[in-house]
Length: 263
Length: 199
Image (tube, rainbow over all chains, first blue to last red):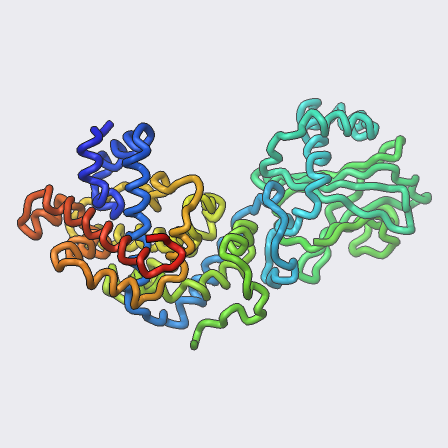
């Protein structure tokens, strides 16, 4: 730690950042114990912060703006955005641009269901995938509530969830999509699915860039719950839809929509 | 101004800097665009003042804004204004570039001296927001030449006080004293320009 007098003499240089790394660290340690030095350093730093204002204004080349926004767009399309823990937007949602964004970029509005979705994932991981899926999917609301409470206050991390809305075709159904951005994998779970008519199945689709891709047929259990694994990068999807289709599956959605969510 | 759309939708007009940065934290590209439109000119001016090269200054400013995009979450309002935080990132990056050009060793100082900032910002923050260029230049002009040159060598030249002592061929203590006295005088001068600051 730097001694008081040495620090005091160096305060101007510290405020300007004109010191060695070692001196900087020693001064920081001294500031922890010497509020007088710290306060004076803050006062001097305030003067330093005005120095950029003294520079002669220069209009940057127009291309710089384009370059920066392009670089940031590239970042947006490659980095997952953990928005669940962020604060509510102080500006209108409408300001969001039309450029592709990860689908979870708009999921802050689904934050209330995030904990529940994460809870289900944790349950599945803990219990193992194959044998316990069925029993876990048939977990009652009470079980989910208990798990949600268990996880209260725990960071959701890179797990993003969205609820799927039911339609008039099957108003009592519910669904959750849970996606882990680092693993680039997730699953869709559905509850209270009515038994499909003879020769029909529930098929799951993702939509992106005006294209619809099948994720496959929902594995349905006798208790009316269903699940399907969601592999790969689904970063820029615009919607997830579950429809009723003829067996074994359909190349394109043709039947009634049962569950859906749009981003 | 050509190339500066100035938030064409106007959705961030009147939005405080802190709220703008919160939108950047949520990865709202329109927000970082608005931030650039507010401060891109001064950032570029600072970078150019330090590196004295248009192309390099562009790179510095681009790096700074991309860093803001990635690390907006590291900003806390108690550590100073958004503008100062942004400028300190530009300054830090520009000095890095400057020192890497020559044979001067790079310095591994914290990005924005944040540890020195108080938990609760004082009224000086409000004053500094409204400062005009002419006022700051006037403050610098009131300094004795030796103090002004010392401060400019340190801030715009990225020199340490030890290096400045060698350059100016004066004792270390003289450089340290010039830095502190010069900054104190600047602050006193600027405070006196503001009615909000007593004395």
